[in-house]
Length: 251
Image (cartoon, rainbow, N blue to C red):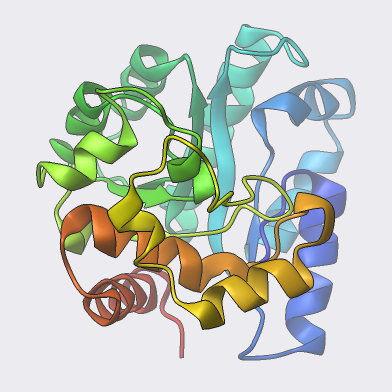
């Protein structure tokens, strides 16, 4: 799945999905950082709507709020976020949420809508308590190689170890080219490191040069999640694949 994060990249993602049908799927999103581009050029919204309505586009987003960086003003982010929620509701396509240091505002906006499509909080990096807020609303949570970077006692690892995150609400992603899963991280428990197969490590070391993340890192991420959850990699792979097939209507 190739995510669009602006009008331009959503158009490019759609083009790729048409070159490689049933192999690549696309999403259409205006990332919070790019919200101001729609404010400054409002006519581009109509092109974005056309892209989002395409059959190959299986979700709206990533969209949401990001208060960690000030690439777009909060009010601009909120306005464009709401527009994308309306669009997802009208098209009945899942909603991919990007949220950084803005959970309460994200929830307040989402709570305005009575009939939301499925909601996926992608690239989750928050605390276990924040995850519970999403799970209580029946949202899905998607995890990345951030597992290797999380050093807290109340974050993503805790979610997996104590069973807070049920497997039927879990998705996995690479967030390429970001979030490279550094399997040599000092804080990664030994039982997790030993749970990563030689085959998965081979993919990482052969294709993810200079720690530029690639889709081939997904098996390693699944194996780490399985080790934290005390499940088999096959169990996690099958469950998360089924969740994705069901959510996005993939063939």
